[in-house]
Length: 212
Image (cartoon, rainbow, N blue to C red; front, side, top):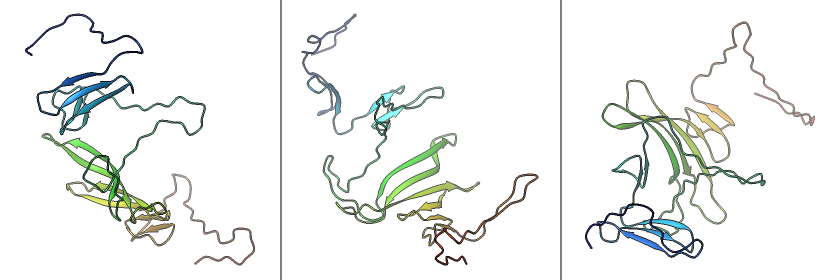
C-alpha cells in the first residue's frame, strides 16, 4: 500500500518464462493485465480507455497529436490476401462478446469525418455500411451510404448509395438501374474536346439487344 518510486528497469520473470503482471486502477474492477501465456495486453473495467498523446481519453482508444499523423496496419506476407485489415463490426446485443444477428437497417460500421468548429469536433461527412436484411448463415445483404453537409447548414444528407445488388443511386436511395441519377446529370468535355455519351446495345451475341 502507499506510494513508491523506482528508478531504472523493472523485470518480472525471465525471457519466455515470465508471469502475468496485473495493475489495478482507482476504480473497482479496473485493471491492466499483461497475459504472459498469450502475449496479450488487456485493459479491463466498465470504462476502459487508452489515451495516446492525451491524458483524458474520450473513447476506448483516443489518439491525439500536434501534427499530421495516422494509424498504420501493415501485413508482411507472401500470401496475396494477407494485407492489413480494419474490421468495423456490430452484434445486435448489449452484452460484450455475445452474438445476435443484426436486423435490416442496423448500421454495420461507419467512418465519420469531423472538423473543429472552434469549440468542438463536428461531423462534415460520413460513410455508413448498413444491413439490408436480417443476417443469418445464408443472408448478409448490405448497402453503402455516403453523406455530406450542405454549405451554411449542419445536417448530413445522403448523397449516394451503392445498393445490395450493386446498383448506384445518386440522389436516390432506391436505385432501379446500375446507375440511377435523380433529376439532372451533366457531361462536360475537357477544354478543346467534346463530351460524349455512348449507348452500347449489342454485347456481341447477336441476340437483338436494344437500348431505350
